[in-house]
Image (cartoon, rainbow, N blue to C red):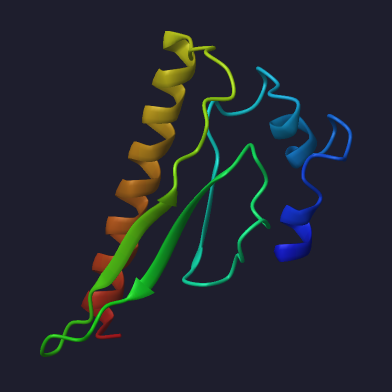
Length: 113
């Protein structure tokens, strides 16, 4: 992942990082790397990316928590907004993935796994 990030947008628009570096309106308006704590060193993060670090928090009883911290705010790459049809397709996709996940979890619980 570190090598991937060090490209710093030198690729063409065909690559994801090339699109981000060029601030293409075809890509997201903001982009974050989400990594374990300490994966990126100072100066390694591309200028077009933010950084969110995740670590397991100290266990409290049976459950271990997760600590999530935004270390570097992602810059705004462009101001293009989604069209309503795109938003509706994303909602539908998320809804069905969520429902399918619930069904699978329920089936697993019923089988005692």
